[in-house]
Image (cartoon, rainbow, N blue to C red; front, side, top):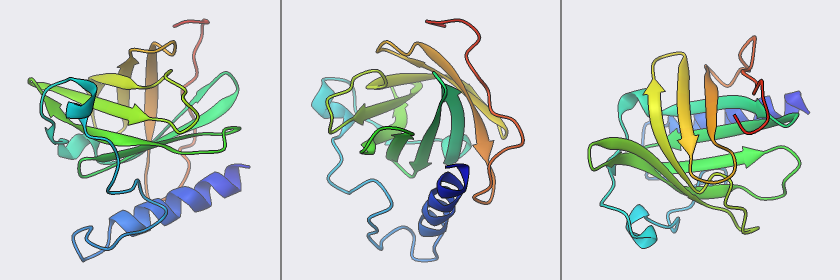
Length: 155
């Protein structure tokens, strides 16, 4: 399973890192028809900071969670679920926000506020049942040597 995730991350980072400025459509990246943050009633989203760009990983409930941010687009995959959640990431009212829509109707990670981010880690507080999660940045399509885990339910 981890090998499949590494392959997916490699494909995503390869697609997002092309020299065409992200103009080439790819089925591996969130679609251009992803809902905008304004459709959820929130403020206008501007570009995500450079610190947010990339592939981020965590574990939750024994499952791997991969969050990929490219430009203003965001995609999220949780092992054991059949579909990617898609949406936007960017600055909104002075805060870095992530808005996702999942085709299965799951709202655990519908809106996230980025609490902190640096070159190695990111903490996001989700408005759904997930709460706060800490992610580790995946470099070059490789899994990090350790993944953060939740220590207490509901944390």
